[in-house]
Image (cartoon, rainbow, N blue to C red):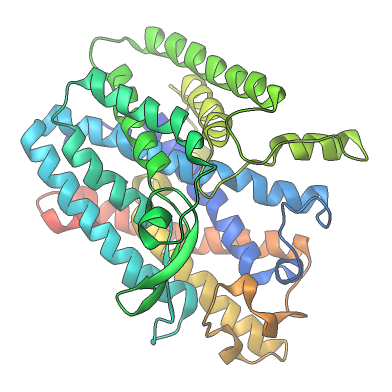
Length: 389
């Protein structure tokens, strides 16, 4: 989510980021509007359906691509500003995002001014990873890549270790603990995310002046295919790389779901391979993409932070209205826990097709605001504080 300001933007990166922003909203609309969200996990193979599973599964691509491309964008900043300024920028930006997660984002999910819980999720993970990258950028590029690879490919070796304390939840295990007088949910343990951002930073070198568009496309294609095939091969072995093993199910379709049902909290090595491989292939195939639809999606990719904050508040505000109109009362959406864990909302919600319609409406409603904000940033590059929004 680091923004470029003076060098030409890579439209394929903005396009990919814009697509995952749009897809991300689908998962959050499902959380607040799908009737089944209050009954079972969409990836619970004992209860889910194929459409519900893939409605959740497709959104798995969002967080890894966010973090990976944040590292890539940091590489662009490094090329423009040098090591010292980049390190300082990443440190300030990272600390800012941590504060935003704890205050603005946490309130948006709950609409509860008492802040009964603090959700440490993707913005938190990006912030922590930026703080770590602020230190890593002082290393040679090769070592940054090595650190990233070790963290991504090696962190599953820690899966058998479990400690009930906030520091371990912060680093590797998902959990909750008292944190400065609030209940903090460590939803995004940071070790693999730091590794993902470091790899994204190293990946940025493919966009240096030393590579023509044609050469870069060939390299991206090879890297994307290699990553995807590595995922398939390692997942088929059913050994290392994810704590959740796949198994034969009652049908071929559900066996496929089991194969794809990977661990996100924290993101397993296989989860990251599964999501980043196709993302790299997408960058290879869209180097020169044009058209009105791509241009519209690029707008979202140019203002990701602005879009992220707005979409949370808009979705939750619409959920307040929906709860009031369906007899549950708007106050049922003033939450003291994640919405899908709220027992009082069992019976509320809509069918999956309605969820998709609401999702489309949310995206369309946010588009003109994102166009306006993109123009504001483009026309006021000297306003330094805009780089934090």
